[in-house]
Amino acid sequence: MNEPKQKPDQTKGNVPPPHPLFDWRPLFFTLFLFALYYSFSTQSETGPAEIPYTQFKQQLYNNQIESVQLRGQQVFGRYSGTDKAKGYDFKTYMPALQDDNLLTEIETRNVELIAKSEQLPTWATVLISILPWILIFGFFAYSNHALQGRMGGGSGLFGFARSRARLYEHVATNEISFDEVAGLDDAKQDLREIIEFLSNPEKFRKLGAKLPKGILMMGPPGTGKTLLAKATAAEAGVPFFSISGSEFVEMFVGVGAGRVRSMFQQAREKAPALIFVDEIDSVGRVRGSGVGGGNDEREQTLNQILAEMDGFADDEPVVVLAATNRPDVLDPALMRPGRFDRKITMELPQKMARLQILQVHTRKKPIGNDVDLPQLSARTIGFSGADLENLVNEAALHAAHDNKSEIEQSDFEYAHDKILLGSARQEILNEEDKKRIAYHESGHALLSISLPNADPVSKVTIIPRGRALGVTETMPVEDRVNYTQDVLEDRLCVLLAGRCSERVVFGNISSGAADDLKQCTRLARRMVTQWGMSEKLGPIYFPQNEEHPFLGMEIATSHDFSDTTAHTIDLEVEALVKKSEQRTEQLLKEKRRQLDMLAEALIAHETLGADEIQALLQQ
Image (cartoon, rainbow, N blue to C red; front, top):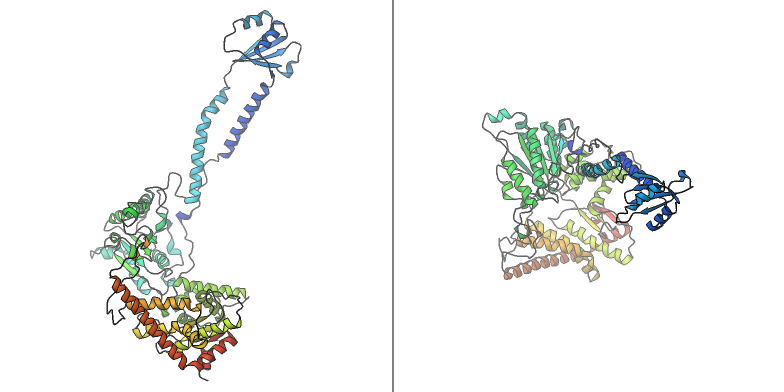
């Protein structure tokens, strides 16, 4: 159901950031060379030895100085008879108090006098005055380019509030269509009306019909919500804006609301258009539910979404598609008519839908003649479309690892066990542990076969997989959407069968039934508190551990019933589990011979299939 995503012909949000119009690095390098040259040139002129001013005056009176250069407070001099090419021989500094006799003494003794300005050259003055501005402008230009590379072509240093939605303008040429989305016939039918309205709006307007402003797709992860949204845009042939809810909110206040405004403005300019917001619960949670009641950035973003959806004109062909797997935490204002007018529920695929999804994913792969897709679809109860895609991919990887030219049934079996049970562990068990695990799994298998309402066994293994030391796999004859009390009571017995088998055979129990007890207790509590399957408590619903829409699990557990009722619930759960345990032990004692046969076969072969188990029990 989740086909590999095709790259759109034009995806504005994924276009690489443009290169800067001017490369600043050569300029910075040139400025550095100029500064270095000026520094060395200055150092070369200030190379002479420094002497005291009084020594300089004494040498001047003794006619030992041939030439003097005045440069502000600095005095450079050359002794008589020295080479002019070597530069000046000494330097000194004039005192702060003005020496009025110095010039007279220099002129009297016919000493060459050279005066130079202390100011920098014109080019150096200009360079120093504009260099800070060049550096500042270059910093902003570089920062803007760097942020464009990190945040997408539409966002720079001054573009945080621009929409980061990815635009697909030519999605109609994609291979993603409704034909590629298998198992969602009801959802596709609801969306076909939206497609028809976008394609032929006059047909509906003349009857006074208004286009739904929003469509909310609700369902577990992996059921194809995102894929269905892209297929809808492809079928309609309109621009498709795609963004995740978490991309609206950044660390800066007001960025989320600005991005919402920018995205809706772009969609209106390209109308008719579709906007798809994935995981909308990240910004659409109930307002005022944060710590302190909060008017935080997330709520500002949600308020802007509500305002923008209200701002759609009645005849404006822009539709918002949103997806979430937590519809219970969304704000009521977001769910009301006029915002998200239509809700589409997408459940896990049933048997026929799973077969269609497998056919889609195996369409372009070399499949062996022994592959039984109907049987595989029957074994994958509870798999989502993404799980089925992963199943086919794991089978292909295993076939490639074994250098096969086709994907065979054994590859699908391997992939199924790896996904559902975990990878096989190379763990060596001692004989005592191996025997206990064999009886544990044999108890599960025997009760599954013996009880009339239990699911039949498809495989039993004592090879450690994942976190389990052994596994008993059952395969329902058909998908169940409703469970009777008899079915649930038989399931409790199957869950307790491994532990009871250990007690019947070894006279004690081990820690290997921890997960079985967890599932058993949870199921029994739901039977008592949610499904009214307790004669003492009657048909009353008792909420347990409900989640807070913002904080997750409640900090302090609260109940809508008294402590006395809570104690009664605990007693009823305990009585139900113990009753199932007594029934399970009685059945295992009556079928002890079959239990021993199954355990011995498991010890010998480690894995038994359904046919092998049936043949063994018929002896």
